[in-house]
Length: 484
Image 1 (tube, helix red, strand yellow):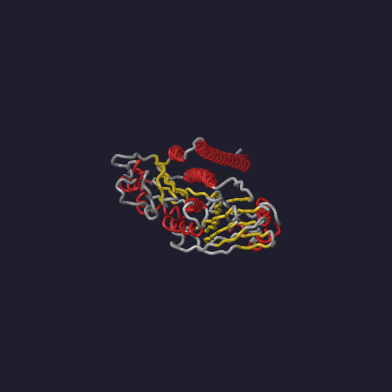
Image 2 (image 1 turned 60 degrees about the vertical axis):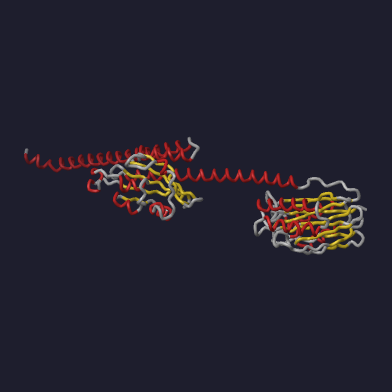
């Protein structure tokens, strides 16, 4: 029997080894399944945590409410002791505290939260924030004693000084216990632009799950950054819409100052057009009746753009109208307006103006030009174009300048064209300039016709030349025609 047993032992040994291998394989499979289950549970927790944060963000409209929800959710989701968010203020060039949670404000151990929220940290005040803004990378400080090298000291009621000096680290959380507290500083950035900083303190052992915790914290920080960016975009959009409304109102007010209908004059026609390159313009035109059947004609161009030019234009037009009632000659009116502008406006603003007085009885046109493009007279009898003489300096530059005055007579069929340099300096898509010669050719080719006909021909020629090119300058035209 013994020999039989010994002879059968190798067979039993192989069977036993096969059984042990099977058990080992099943055990390994069970362990792997357990790990996979744990990993899936961790993934599910991460997804649930981030979904909870996303739902909180979506359900709120104000940035302060969103950041407040984030700093309150963080300790519950990832086991941090406290959470603080700073936002970069571009206008002030500094970080401002936005929200904090997990630290009791007031008392002996902490700052007053309302006072702390008013603090600003300019570059150099808070090295840790500066480092985050420069590197745009997470910074982890695993030793509590090292914080003092990264945060500002010396603020008696400041939150950061409280963290570094007034707060005691419990013995069971010391480095010797194997469970040190860690300060995590995360940039809140979008496409490389740091919009803020999130500071958190880990209050549980770092352990093997820290990677997952960092994943959640980093993802929440990214959501906070997107919330800040969205708030900035909404503010910019609101400011842009507000500015556009203000500019449209300014445009309407400015246009209300300019005449909207041509006067009905026996033996004469007047046509005009005014196109602003922006919502408000520096160009202006005007016409008004004077005693003894005379008509004042004004065209001007402020050497600037936007709202300052619009305000300066309104001032210049008002002064011309006021002085035209006091002075008899165009040169005297412009000289007086110049002195008033020099005395009452900021340096650097000036305006070019052509002012003429037309006698409706005789056709006499007395004019003076203060640096403005010279009006053009088209003679029906000779079929020639006569540029009027250009003299004088722009208004608002020097006080006491002398303006020269000239006189011409308009005969039946003649036209006189007043314009601003937005007409002659219009650009084509290829970069060409409309120019004085093309304007002269357009007027000469128009032939005899009404003031409105000539105005339309000039405008159509300029628009065709520009093509799809937008206006680079305001364009103003005024045409006077003495009927046959």
